[in-house]
Structures are given as structure tokens and as C-alpha cells.
Amino acid sequence: MMPSSVLQVKRLQPELITPAKPTLQETKFLSDIDDQEGLRFQLPVIMCYKDNPSLNENRNPIKVIREALSRALVYYYPLAGRLREGPNRMLMVDCNGEGILFVEASADVTLEQLGDKILPPCPLLEEFLFNFPGSDGIIGCPLLLVQVTRLTCGGFILALRLNHTMCDAPGFLQFLTAVAEMARGEIHAPSIIPVWERELLFARDPPRITCAHHEYEDVIDHSDGSYASSNQSNMVQRSFYFGSKEMRVLRKQIPPHLISTCSTFDLITACLWKCRTFALKINPKQAVRVSCIVNARGKHHNVRLPLGYYGNAFAFPAAVSKAEPLCKNPLGYALELVKKAKATMNEEYLRSVADLLVLRGRPQYSSTGSNFLVSDLTRVGVGDANFGWGQPVFAGPAKAMDLISFYIQHKNNTEDGILVPMCLPLSAIERFQQELNRITQEPKEDICNNLRSTRIMSMM
Image (tube, rainbow, N blue to C red):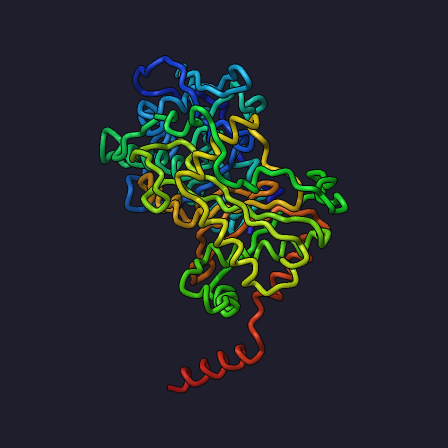
């Protein structure tokens, strides 16, 4: 494995990729869900591809992806514009066709040499997604940054940084799928035509809050302030893997009445919430929350959005508990709270969120350590994006955010599992690891039974 200090990435000067054909010059408003304060950030994503020997050796991924982006932007032309602020800081898109930022690069390294350094938290992110000065703002900056880095093995790394106000994970995947279709040369128009129609998620007139929204409530902080006082230099990132062994141990802790309805997401979320609260040594009387991002698309939540809608279409209802019962009770306690919070999501809940954001002036999701937010990307399908080189060996967010963790599908050695990057103060990360190990540790009798079964099978 190559040390990160040795890696040399050569980058050309950035260029702007504009739509391949003239597009409408207009101003488009974001929805009130898009426009919330908590989405005004840029999210880095990294995708790694092996060489495909069956392709023409002259096929250049940089050229292919550059041209495919330009063609896809004809249909997704708002992404080539710039955000502006209107009255009351309301965001709108100036669809001026200025373009997205694109960087061509090469690195004297192979995917095999990079090894786990491509996984979150990616220590080489700044090499594979260079932050050009003035490009990472929200207002007046490119809405998408793309860097394609060719490797000596013939593979490449595609790294992207998206302004989250423009779309959520399913919406971004829809755009990436269109780019991939163009790159493969299969069609001249996306298989799913993008739909803007952000007015579908405007606040109602008059706005009215009809549901409880704990995720936006102010929390009285009884903690010692250690999380809030932790500057970025004291925050560390580490990823944790949930494979078949970890899930088997956790499932044995599910109460009987929840066994048939408990999802993998529910179980991991309950586990992380308990471990994180324990690790941060939060005051026992402190209210702690975990918010679950719930996609509004599809029939399950009865939110009527057209096929092709690529704006932010989710809410993050919160489960709430005092720290003491969360840490002391069995896992089933947290699990039940997580399931109940998720079950509140429906069209009325989402409409009520939009109304709350307007009535209360876009309240910020609280940034205290007692709050935690999780997003399940295992079913989004980022790992299916095929630009002609097959599926990526890894695809997902390059790191956790301060209070946000992502669940990423990942194959570890021979089994499929879920990778979860976490961001915690240095003083808490080891306690988190120890508590997670304790909760996911197989009882000794189970280990003995597994070994006995293995011996019996080997003798047959």
C-alpha cells in the first residue's frame, strides 16, 4: 500500500463544462425543503473504477465523462447555473449556463496500491477532489465540481462535490445515471426525463404546522459542552463495518414483538445511537436525538411527486430520549424509538416540515453533540453507475459530516456489509469503538457452537 505522503497527483487547470446545446436562460426557485439552512453545504462523493480490458485501449474516461456531462446538462441545465439570494435569503437558481467545474488529473498509482485509502474517511480526498479557491461557497459558485483522475493500472477515480440544496441522493443518482447512459452511448436522451417542479414542495398557503418536529426543536443542553467546544482539529473520522457477524449478534437482541418488522437500518441506527451517546459521556438528564433521513418518493409514504423529480424530497423525523435510559436499557428500547420516529413520515409530515421552515425562518438543525443524523444509501444505487467501465469497486460519500453518518454498501473481503463513517471528538472515538465491540461481541457459547459446527462440517 502506498503512503499518502508519496502520492503525486498532476492536475490540469480547471475548466467549465457547459451544456452541449443552448438552454433556457431563466430563474428557478428552489422548494422550501431545498431552501432550508441545514442543506446549505457541499457533499463530496468518490467513485473508483477498474480498467476494462474489453474496451478500446484508446477510450479515455476523462474525454468520455467530460462529453457525457455536457450532454446530460442539456436536460439538467439548472445544475450549470448559479445560486442567488432573494428577499429573506430565499435561494433561487440563475440558469445562466455558466457551467460546472471540471478537473482532469492523473496519478502515478494503481487501485491495488491505494487499497483502503479510497474508503471513507478518504485520507486522499484533497488529492482526488481538489478544492479550488472560491469554488466551495453556496452563493455564486459552481453547483457541481467533478475531478477525473486516471491511474497507471488503467482504472480511474471519479470524485464529485455537489451543492446539496439542488438535489438529494436519489436525485443526484438520477443525474449520474443520465451521464452514465450518455457515456455508454446507448441513448440520446436520459431514460428518465428530469422534472423540476419545485413548487410541489412549497409551503402551503397559509402555512400550518400539523405535526411534531423534534428535529427542529431547541434542546436544553445539560452536557459539559465538550462536543461543542471541539474544534475541527480535535474531531476525528473512522469507519465501522457491519457484516454478517455483527448483524447476527444485534438481531439476537431484538425484542420478540419487533423481530418481524425490524430492518437492518433500524437495528444499526439504534446501535449507533446508544454507542455514540455513551462515548460522548452526555449528561444523564440530557435529551438526545437521532434523526433518520426518510425518502418521500414512491408509494410507501404517499407523497405525490412525479417520476424524474430530482429535488430534495425527504424529511428526517427524530427519535428522542434522555441519555440515561438510552444507555442503560437494552437495545430494544432504542430500536422501538427509531421505528416510531420513522413511522411518522408521510405526505402530511413533509408538508408540515415545509410550513415550519417558512413560519420559523428556516431553523438550523441543532449542532450540539446530543443530536445525530443518519442516511441510508445502501438502496440508492450509486454503486450501479456504469460509465462503460463496469460498476465501481467503491461508490459513496468520501467522509462523514460533523453530525451526519451514511450507511454505504461495501464488500469487505468476501461478504457484503455496510460501512458507516463516523465523526467524533478524539476523546470519544475509542470509547465508541469499545462500546460497539461490546454490543456486537458474540457470547462465548455461540463462538464455541460455531467452532464446533465448523469442525463437524470439515469432517464430513
